[in-house]
Amino acid sequence: MDKIMVNQLDLFYGDQQALNSINLAMKERSVTALIGPSGCGKSTFLRTLNRMQDLIPSVKILGQVTIDGQDIYTADTDVVLLRKKVGMVFQHPNPFPKSVFENVAYGPRIHGETDKKKLNEIVETSLKDAALWNEVKDRLHASALGLSGGQQQRLCIARLLAVGPEILLMDEPTSALDPISTMKIEELIAELKDKYTIMIVTHNMHQASRVSDRTAFFLSGDLIEEDVTSVLFTRPAKKKTEDYISGRFG
Image 1 (cartoon, rainbow, N blue to C red):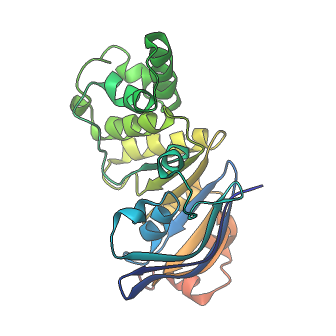
Image 2: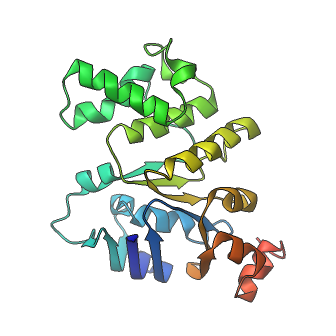
Image 3: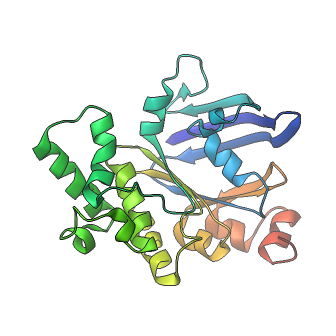
């Protein structure tokens, strides 16, 4: 079943067009990787899926993005609820300057959860789901800023999971991390896709081939090709895709 459907999506920054008639479908509980050179529209596209682009005054978006059959760009869309359902992890870990516990409990508190026992359960479950519990269970009330970069990124993932999302958007989540931390995040993605629909922007084609079920190749605001990852990397249909994957440009 398709969780997300994007139809004829155009995006403009003022007079400059950044996305050109994008059509893409994403299946539920799968991982889709977005690849392509810098400035090709990957992150711009990712941010259309939870309306992060609304925060930029000059942006104009045409076309349709539906999640579970609902158009998320209608005037009556509750953007706060949308971003609860469609969470986002950024390139650099951005924990709050609070304790590990308060980072994870923050979202549920904002959405009205006050029961202490329930908050404890949510924090523990979220940290376990983010493969971080065993590393931080004895330091829940220490500052999150004392964690390593890889731990901070998993904490940010736990913070997302705590509010019960269905879709996880990851914008180069390992680009600021060392190889061991990167491997832990990749292993985590493999576990999370049993419960969540995941889209990851990555510059690392090896990473795309390791973690994703399908891969979409963007170039200059166009979606050039999208296919099963193993097919796209071994038998791409378009010459531009083949040239990028083989390292002729990008």
